[in-house]
Structures are given as structure tokens and as C-alpha cells.
Length: 166
Ligand code: OFO
Picture (cartoon, rainbow, N blue to C red):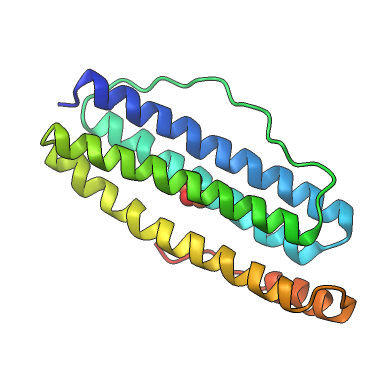
């Protein structure tokens, strides 16, 4: 059985994950507007991953006989971006999510809630991967800065992103 405190923290994380999805959806739209369909595809895939993350928390709360409470979503602040600023924002967003996961893990340990502690392991590993893949694109964008051919090639590469194997 989840404590009230843990239940509310997990519900808050559903909102964080859905907000992440919303951020990436806004980034996909912005990429299309800039004329970068490969970027748009990459962000759309990320949007779908975030929906799946929210669903993991949703299912977990219900599996533990808890109550799901859905809150309102904030408006994503994505506007007038450059290819680099999109990925820099994505990285700083992921760093924020990593901190949220670590706080949840701290709470699970404080409460000796072993089930939640184990459940969160998947997210700890996922955050390492998400920060790394976002940082890789930032590094590539910095390398080709001011070179439209380089940007074109990165866009082509991003268009090939496949769904992650779970
Ligand atoms: Fe981007 O990992 Fe969930 O939020």
C-alpha cells in the first residue's frame, strides 16, 4: 500500500511526464516550422516515449491500489527556437526530470517502500540514456554551427530514430 505522501508524489510525476510529452510535442511543431522534418520526427518519438512514461506511473499507482489524480498541464515555453536551443532546452528539461526521479527515490528509501524503490530503477537508467542522447545531438549541432550542409545531415540522421526497445 502506498503512503499518502508517496501517492501524491507519484501523481505529481504523472503530471511531469505528461508535461514532458507536451514540451516535446511543441518542439516537434517548432521543428516543422523551421523546416526540419527529421528534428520533428525525433521530438515526436520523444513525445510518445513520455506518454509511455506517464502510463508506467499511472499503472503502478493503480497496481498498488492507489488513487490516480490528474492535474492540469502547464503551457510549454517553446517559441522562436533555433535547432541548438531546442536541444539545449530538451537537455535542461531532462536534467530537471532526473532530479524529480532522484527525489522520488529518496522518498521511497525514507519510507522503506521497497516496491517503489525497485519500480523507479527503470527510470534512473532511462534518464541516463535520455540525457546522453540529447547531449550527443547538442555536440553534433555545435560542431556544424553555421554550416547548413551539416544541419541537413543531422536532420536526416534524426529522421531515422526508431522506438526504443522497452
Ligand atoms: Fe524524458 O523522461 Fe520522462 O520525462
